[in-house]
Image (cartoon, rainbow, N blue to C red; front, side, top):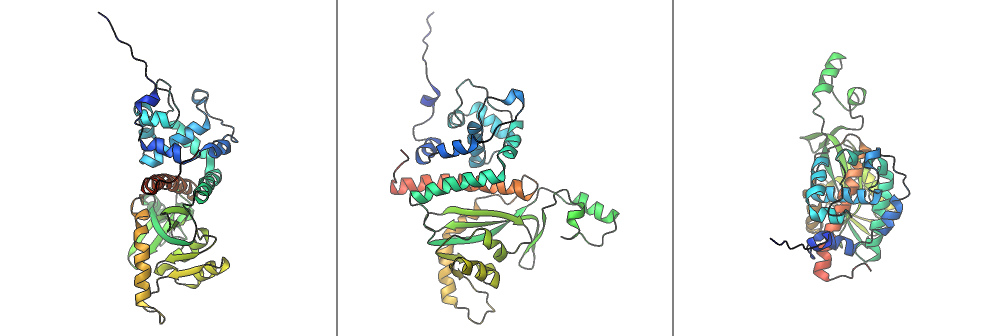
Length: 325
């Protein structure tokens, strides 16, 4: 009996038109690699050797595919495209799920903000972002906590109400609190403020705050450096006007119905302009996996990077924009 042996590489097993290939063709990740290599890894001995850049690529997979840590571990073991993207060999050992939480802590929110800006600068250089017209909005993030323990503590300590003044004294998550939209929509958790470049549909800035920070006060964290800002009724107050005036921006906010100077036709026009960019909020989860603002800000940055990756592929296929050389 004779056997035929065929030698193949992992690169040959990944489709030529796979999205992960397009990511690496369109985005220069070398500046990200250099930024990450500034960090000295201090992981357990059995987890050393992967390299922090490869592990960061694993996190990109996680947020692009919305995977838990355990699901990410399994993807890296069994999915050939995931192995290829994260620069593992076909037979290489891949990370255990317990490493990813250590990795997120090691990178930290501040360094990830630098990485987000590095990638955003590439978008601007390629002409994807111009900050001429910007869409801003805020969405609720619901905490993973159920509040039953907090309620029992409040009763035991004889607090009359479980509100935002009492919560920091008894809650496990000191940053989460109650938020309200309108008169009847309440949630416990955080609020995510996002600005979207209306030229490309890509996320320009994102910030996570406590849930009770009103939209217009959170605007200062996400406004662009120039151009016009299109916003809903939550931004038609003095807080938004002051934030816009500081950067000499044109604030195009829909006015509330009880305002004397409301122009219904103009507001209808603003609504039509804003409508296509609402999808940025409809495709992300409103439930958080982590405690605290810092960890959820990290998640918001990673989700924004993943969104911009995917949007870049769509735009490149539509307009055949030049690739990274």
